[in-house]
Figure 1 (tube, rainbow, N blue to C red):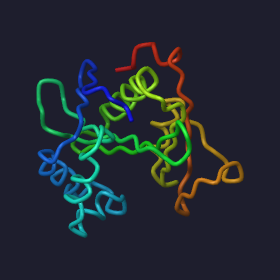
Figure 2: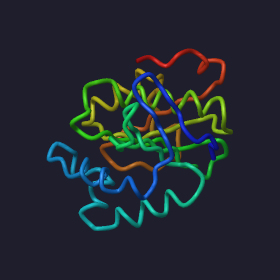
Figure 3: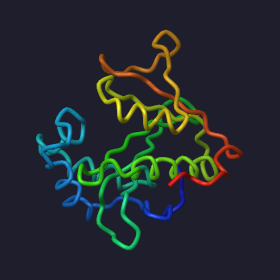
Figure 4: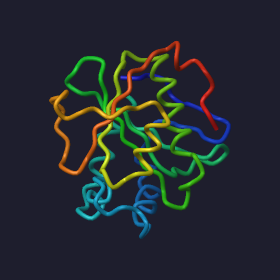
Length: 179
């Protein structure tokens, strides 16, 4: 697991998420613009969000709270979850709808991937995205993720989703994250 505590950009700070972030996470997920079919929205409806957050924050950082520099309120999260495959992790992220369309998700993910390439054993990152979530697919493609044909993987993703992957390289990640 990555072991660094905080990651900063010119506009954002990523820090390990804590249970204290639960109210802000719930507020973001309650926004009517937030997609109700995403796993976190389902967890909130099923009253399992607090238990999930407790479980994921109990170990080494896997989930980072995205905050605006100078403010500690969580406006979203980004996660890297280890898989059974060596050196491979799943990427997941969300941002509260009031913060959409400002490049913040791309900035946060880019900064986390840069730190991951420098400070962890992860070499391969994968993400599953709903085919109808074109903004997320474009965001990941801008971060050099590429689609994986279903015939080339044994990763299980839901129907109507696309699998994207990115190989990490410390030499490629040493450049400045776009803002």
